[in-house]
Amino acid sequence: MESGRRDRLKTPGGTTSDGIEGDCVTAEKCAIISGSPDTTESTVVTGPETTARVTAQEGPSIVTGQETTTGDTAQEGTSIVTGPGTTARVTAQEGTSIVTGQETTAGVIAQEGTSIVTGPETTARVTAQEGTSIVTGPETTARVTAQEGPSIVTCQETTAGVIAQEGTSIITGQETTAGVIAQEGTSIVTGQETTAGVTAHEGPGCHSPAGQ
Image (cartoon, rainbow, N blue to C red):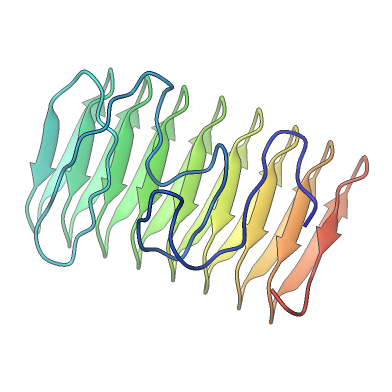
């Protein structure tokens, strides 16, 4: 698999390099647990049917229960975790990690290397800047404007409508449709049963391998 100028991504499936179970396996910048370079890891656990994998930095952790709505401004590495049946609308700054549970909608402005992970049955509409990593789970729709080399990985049963610039790597899993404008050496790989409609500029590698 060819890779973008700045990012390289492994194929979806299995676990992350940190041993976390999930449908996305990533390398280098794209990580389920990832924040600013100076973040310190901390663990936040929420209730039933919720996954919390958060990198916390210099700030309190906020956990909300079921049927809860959080409208928070997170700064300086604060971790915010919402449970099932919850809507999280968060402005994340300075390496904040945000994790939302199942049946959750995340509308997030991520800046300065923030990591965002959304669970199953979740919609992520994110503006990613400055090397942000974004990972979406199964049955998820990712509509992302990627700038300055962020990595974007979508899992199975996912639709990716992405404008990729400056060497961004994009990988979509099985049963996925990729409609991508690729510029400046971007690598695009789509899995089996996948439709790739790609406008490629400046020598990107675009593949639809039958055996992925």
